[in-house]
Length: 330
View 1 (cartoon, rainbow, N blue to C red):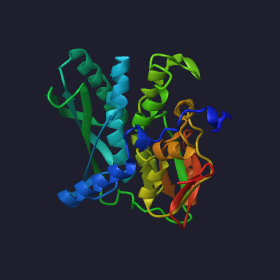
View 2: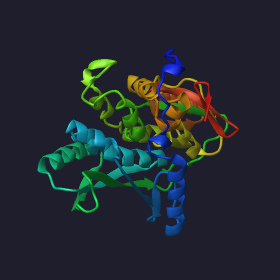
View 3: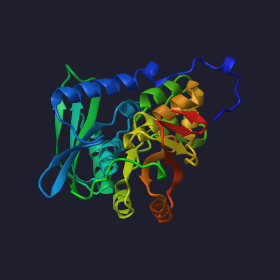
View 4: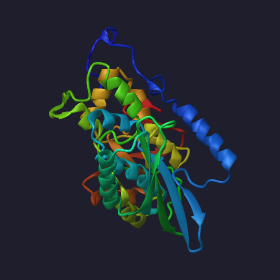
């Protein structure tokens, strides 16, 4: 991803932590919260044994992508992101998403904004195949500046339907294309692109779109992968979100050798260049073109990839403890 610019002419390189989000501190805080609240099952979702099935719950929000929506005065897609970030976590566990509740917290009620968010939630629910079963709107001017959108997705899985959750040395890794920057790392992306640009400026690789429109491209929903992944006996899966490619470590302690990843969409090179962000930091923060990865036995991986135009074998699993991609070791 080197564009040949003289490093001495570049502004100081950005990192996610310097932009305001320290992944290590965030994970430590999450671990402390879980330790205080009791038992938690699964890397992506909480599981409750309800007899012949598991009930799974995942909760997440849209994050600082909302600030781009505010700047663009366009909240029509953030509901898709909200459902995607939750539904995709369930899919990575081997759970079928079935229902969703949203939580909208606002400084001041605004009917037009709420309507746009609702339209996005409806579109996301259709893509994920879930029912919107309610929600809550809270008006909290002393707490909220602007608004925040979050939600919880419920899912069900038969006892034998969950992925085992652990990759195996010798497995092949199947990757599925992302739709772009999705809904994580926006704190870094926003800081990078607004150094010299406004969100309403044309996006240089595609001047028919603005920078803001490119950043607001909604997160892809991977609910359609669940059936085929079960059919081909997937051992484990990773939703490539916060933490970027280091998320593969959620499939177990192995060396994940990525030899043929999807090419990053132009938005990633734009962020890298405008923020002078290192390649390692980009891969530790963003999906870089691949939004979902699953670990399967080689023959199953080949069969899965042959059935999908948006999937391919991107690497394999070895003994070790790292992720290797594009001459980087994470």
